[in-house]
Image 1: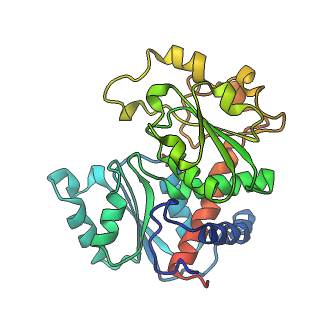
Image 2: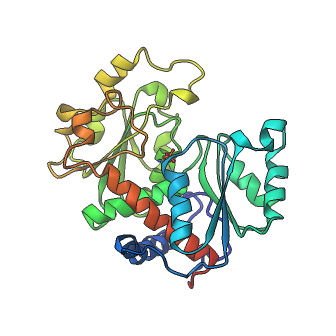
Image 3: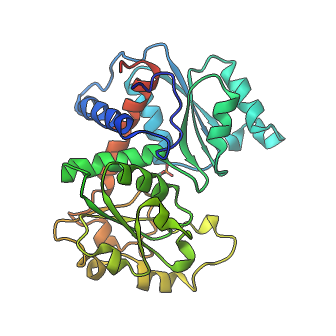
Length: 307
Ligand code: CP
């Protein structure tokens, strides 16, 4: 079992053992984040490049900080200010960057499958930081890490994922990761935002969030991804909020000690009310810290770590 030198493209393809290796490594490395000087020499001399063709606050920054905390150099490529604007293809862009001596590429792109494509073009490892509607594997891992922080185990955990499942790479990675580790996953959303055959992934699908959240240990609220909808798939934001927005009343269907999660960025007042997002049961900001630890573990295991 080793991630060394390998890509990390999807949780569908990742074994439970490799996921557990990332999680246990992140558990050890998280302590570095509370030190006054957040720096270990482990990845000195390594260079990672973030290629983001879509906006990001959490994923891009946390990968770059994770690299720096491990003493790797992090360079950042932004499609908005690059030769992509002059028509350069993804393959040419990536080949040129790799000739500058980078050791690992971390990419976010709007096209599903683009990270798998990149991994065929490049000889260096590729990490998927979100590809279209396909997967966001490092988000899935940091979410599982956060659930373990609060609930100690994943096997048997009841997780309700609510919202825009159809467009959500976060939902797909969580479904693959959580079911592989033994969680019971329920999903709910408007029928137009539930992929057909979703139950084949091992989840139970409901039309009402209250049904999915009945007895849940974790309520995972998804962002409504209006930018991925060519035409509106529900009547209005107000109606969405009334039927699917998570408020105190809907939350009462979950267990009293259920935690609330959201990958960010939040549409407050649409998929989640502010009082729920900011309540003591919300672990949304803890997810962000988990993201740094999990991404440190991924860089360590791929670039320099022992099995
Ligand atoms: N959760 C997440 O992917 O956030 P960003 O879009 O800010 O990276």
